Image (tube, rainbow over the protein chains, first blue to last red):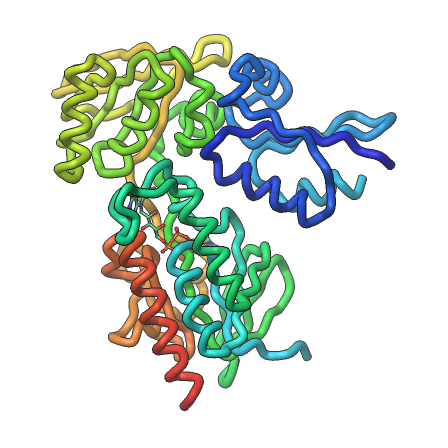
Length: 83
Length: 307
Ligand SMILES: Cc1cc2nc3c(=O)[nH]c(=O)nc-3n(C[C@H](O)[C@H](O)[C@H](O)COP(=O)(O)OP(=O)(O)OC[C@H]3O[C@@H](n4cnc5c(N)ncnc54)[C@H](O)[C@@H]3O)c2cc1C
């Protein structure tokens, strides 16, 4: 099933780097929205995640609710990729 | 029965990665298990100015990437995994990692430490939604907002100074007095005279309060008097706790604060298990010393394996 993945990040965020490295290791392509470069996206990511924090990873799969992972959580990311 | 690894390192912070550079170059097959971020606390630090060899300083994340690349260049294997226990089985140790057993002849524990909580009402409730512990991750959400930073040590001052690039103003709540290096104290004095930071000494943080689920003030006690500080968020940097909870039922002895006791060879009370970096009793909590201890532990591990 094709997945559309978006990772919300900031420049100096090490946990964001871990999420990107993890997705790279799984051969997944993804869009990056860097809040330092696009501060206008802050409210959107806050509305999606409920927190003022990055990384936030949104994995959209056809005909299913998107999965939202806050922080660096490989177990949750792996389950969302497998779904 | 699974194979016995010559060396497993718990953690992949600066101390662990430095040790891996040495052990891999000695041809000791080395696997690191990391439950959080490769590079440890150094990776989440904005700028490191006191690590020797970088005259202009280096971003924490870049230093972490360099340490990782150097260890991997010599063959270190880094796996994601949360080490839950270590048991002595005589000639080898058994590590429980995410529910699976991993065997190792020698183990190096380099698990560092994690942020302490202040333990006041509102702290856990608004975690991530107004209460934060990582300035490099969450600072950009507070562009042009007011913040409270709690703490008066090196980390708190460094993080407060970093946050001034986003915020309109910071109230720094310090329980007693500032205990930071001269350089940081000087930078803080400048931020205070520029009106970016107000320092409140002898001030305890009592509660983090929200209205309609949005953090909007901190209740504090300053010089014995109750006071309220309006804010949009709170960043807490009040010290560190050693990551040794997973050793609670092991035979590895800890000091009163929970740091691992070692002998002159950095070996713990469980033979064949070594410890280095911030997690070790007596550590000086600096990247340079964590890296130095990693190298020392690696050379002692080589000696132990040759016996
Ligand atoms: C805000 C801040 C600013 C700092 N600034 C500086 C500075 O400018 N200069 C300086 O020299 N030092 C600085 N320090 C201190 C420095 O970051 C530490 O001394 C250094 O990172 C210690 O390295 P370490 O490898 O011992 O531990 P850590 O960096 O803490 O790494 C330990 C690693 O082990 C992992 N781990 C823990 N438990 C487990 C487990 N059970 N299973 C698997 N993995 C585990 C952790 O996730 C972590 O990645 C700063 C610290 C902070 C908090």
